[in-house]
Image (cartoon, rainbow, N blue to C red; front, side, top):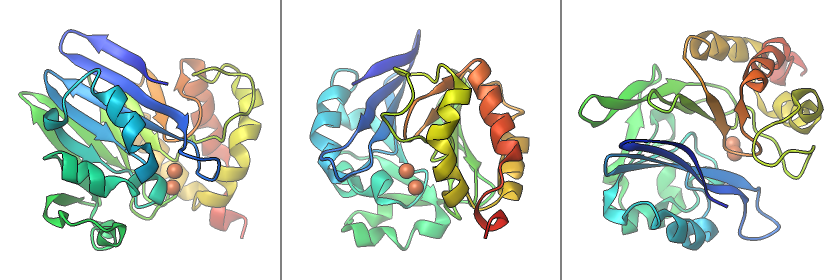
Length: 245
Ligand SMILES: [Fe+2]
Ligand SMILES: [Fe+2]
C-alpha cells in the first residue's frame, strides 16, 4: 500500500510501503519517500525482496535519478538489506550513523564511497535551497547509533524502531486509533529492544521541542494527534532493557 501523508506545493511525504515483507518470514516494515521539488529522499528502504514493489510505487511519484539521498535509521537487515541494489540503481548517497559505516560492506555493497557516516550529535541534511532534513540522534533506541528524521515542512518525525508495533494487532487501519489498546502491541518489543528508560527520556527531551503532526515508525501504525502525546507519556515511564536486566 502507498499513501500520501503530506502534499503541499512542491513537497510530498509518501508512505510507499506499509507493513509489507516479501514472505511470511520477514518482519513487516514501512518505507517512506520525501519529494521536495524534484529531489527525492528514501527512508529505510528495507530488505532486498521489497525492491520490485517499492520501485513500481516510487515510479508513480518520482524517477530513480531524482533520488538524492537514502537515509538509514540504523544497521538492521530490515533497514539496509536491499541497500546494494538501491545504490546500483540510483546515484544517491546513503546516510547512516558513523558507527555502522564499516559494517555495511557485509551487505555486499560495492559503492561504499557513497555511504556517509553521520556524527553522534546528528546533522542537518541539506536538500535544496533552504530545505533541509534534521537527522536527530536516538542512540540506544534500540541501536547504539540510531537516527530519526524530522521533516520541518510536513512536520513528520520518522522514528525508526521507536513506536514500532507488529501487525496485525489492535483495530487500526493506518493510524493508531486507541493508544491504550495499541500499547499491548508495542510493549513487549520496547521492553526488550530499547536500552533503558534514561535513553528514552534523553530522546523525548530532544524531540518534544519539535512541532510534530505525525510520528512515522519503521513498523506498525502511525501516530497523530493525541496518540503522539500518549506515546511520549508511555515511553517516559517505560522501564526497559537494562532497567529490567
Ligand atoms: Fe531495528
Ligand atoms: Fe526495524
